Length: 248
Image (tube, rainbow, N blue to C red; front, top):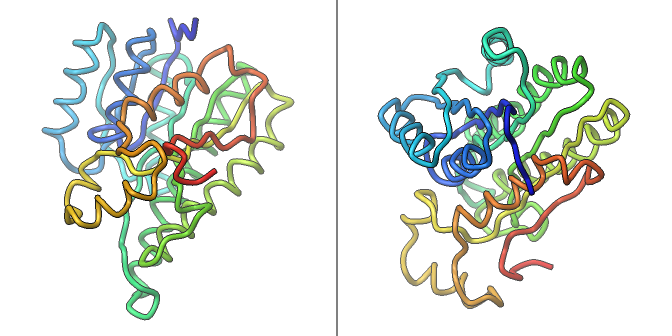
């Protein structure tokens, strides 16, 4: 079940955190995984080694996911080398947390350029090739705060909410071509992004989570693997919440 043998997957922001976990999980199911990264080559190479240790294979590829032309070229090169792209996991994202009155134009622009623009440009490039095969899986990593909101995350939550809108629209546009588009909305997950929070803040968030703990990147990756599989062929336009009951 959930075999991805002979599939080619691209995971954006695949060098660490949830992206890395997704790359490893996809590789474990047989996919050839291309790990996109922005600048930390050492982390990307480490992630690739973990992919191979899981019994899979893949490569790293550096490009700016927020640059439409660079993304189009990179995905075109993947298809030229591998003959296909079957799975796109739009995971790359940044957070510039500020109360609204402190938000700067640059923080807004950069967050939307990566979090929303990156997913849009990668999807546009991948769908062009998926349509020829009449099959494809796109999974967008949103967030619990896209639906619940969170003080201090006006820009981040708005960008992740926009990603859900993109997911639902693309699902309707390309379902007839055999392409599914879904979102996974993680809750409070133990990653590099959350590790820097003060313990008091972590305890407060955990107290709001019925499961009583932080989630793991692997638990998020499991949902991604399902949505990337043939078994999920009739699931599209959905938001899968992996949040321990934090938002229901």
